Image 1 (cartoon, helix red, strand yellow):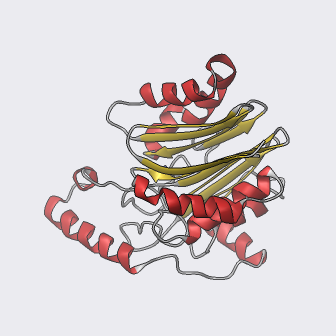
Image 2: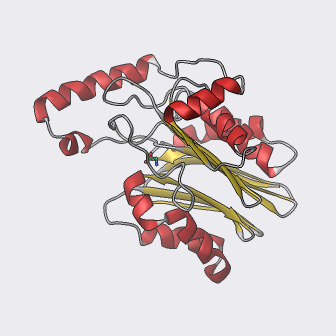
Image 3: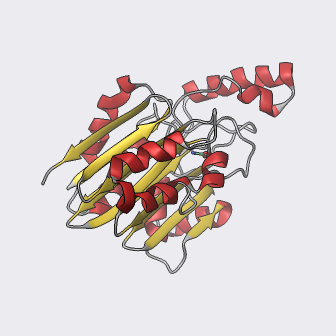
Length: 270
Ligand code: GLY
């Protein structure tokens, strides 16, 4: 079993222990259950921007995105509110003939599947939002308030077990976006990809990752240049000034690369 997980590009390496705790908690008997378990544990840690502790949008709501890919199939949710573990809802979507459920439809499906109502906001995030509202008052232009916003933006995990690869990702969205905005995380080839050569998850500014199809770009480089170089190349060739992080697993182990610090932990057992 090979596993690597991250706590978002921009998150301090001092959080590596918390990512490691999530990996230890989530590891299971196959790649699918492992990535769901690890990402669920990261969603439950309020320090990360996913699940509980997700960043609050400018209107005061939390909307979350999550996805899983395994054995050529995908389950994803976008702009879902009021659930504890979006990745577990995505894992339930995986069981349907569909790929992606959004917003109210995703929430209705979650409730039908037995997921209880949950408020993912925290005191720390509410204070962060009110500071951002003050800034917005001063600047009035959304672009300006994004300047200087930092911190982890997504959590993710990739795993390999018995030659099967899985990728899982979850986020509260980047920066203090407007309601309805969806980033790279629930979009195949952008925030995640898994196939016969390995599995990849990205983190960073969703809009730029979407434009670059970064997860698929990294995945398609693996057979050509190897795991580490594939990750390095995607980070090096990314849009200038835009932050990105990548984790990947392949037949030889795990790799990661990022444009700035990114908390992470890996686990390899032959
Ligand atoms: N990378 C997460 C997002 O942009 O929503």
